[in-house]
Image (cartoon, rainbow, N blue to C red; front, side, top):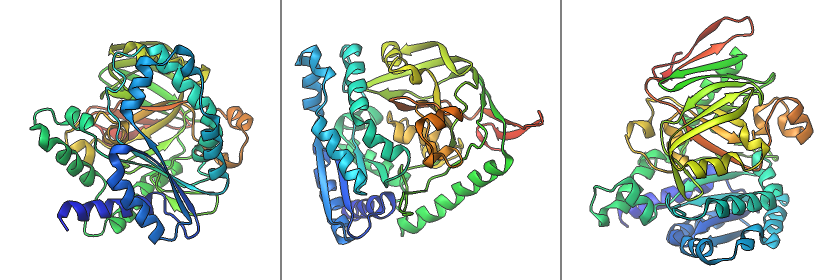
Length: 410
């Protein structure tokens, strides 16, 4: 067995045993591209070895997706196969775990009519909302892991010979997910403990607001009463722990929907709906986006913001030190799963109920009453840099450093 095969086995084990943490007798739902088939087979094997009752794989193919956007009639993007949405919902209701394997091409939908993309995403989000409620509230275990694709590797490593790019991206993924450690599972336990310590400190401080300052950014974000900072690990409705994102370097909470004011500038490209949005800024007044700019991908950004009323507001703020493994790799991954874990970031759209005390048990109306945003979408974008300062504003009106020059101040 080669070193790569060994690492791939360890990666599959990490996804199954730490990511979704499959339990004996549980069903695992896997959403994966055809190009990831060899890795998916390892995941399936490991899940059954850990006692899974059934492993159901939903396959996708980006070439087929592109063909639909190029050739299908407009009305096709206003329809969604409800049998699929209902199937996902039924499996979640029965306690299935969900694993999403991301191998997306950042430029897949380049040149496609943004209106088609917006309609398709809105339609899919509406149909899948009942299932997404299970993941947004952590009622089920779920996680996202990455798998290289040739177009993605070409984007990240354009200076390498074409035949070396996939290998280079695999190496970067293994490094970011601690696969090179002798015992990745134990390494992840230590890592999540460190992130939890930062979340504990922030929860003890109970800041009224955070103020972000950097080049192009002067933003104040008010926090709702009873907000909760959360780190890497979570627990589902049955008390089983899991890690939603692999890799992860963030500590995050929800903003007060109407409490965001100022301007924030992006620091990394955002890959959204098969398009890249670059060098963009957002201006907020009383929580709402009132102006935006972008050097590239302006229409894609407009489509994101205009998904629904809630996509004009923020649903997440996340703190990630600039001095962290993914950031120190000096790579732009053109993939949010990685780039968000190299940078402080915000998310347009829906807030996570777990970021509010007793939020998992609240109705949607109660969450809104407590100041959390609701939307069909949730999209992270990166704002951090080595120059960013963040101050925590106390209830008393005083303030103290939280970040200085991109890193934790405590």
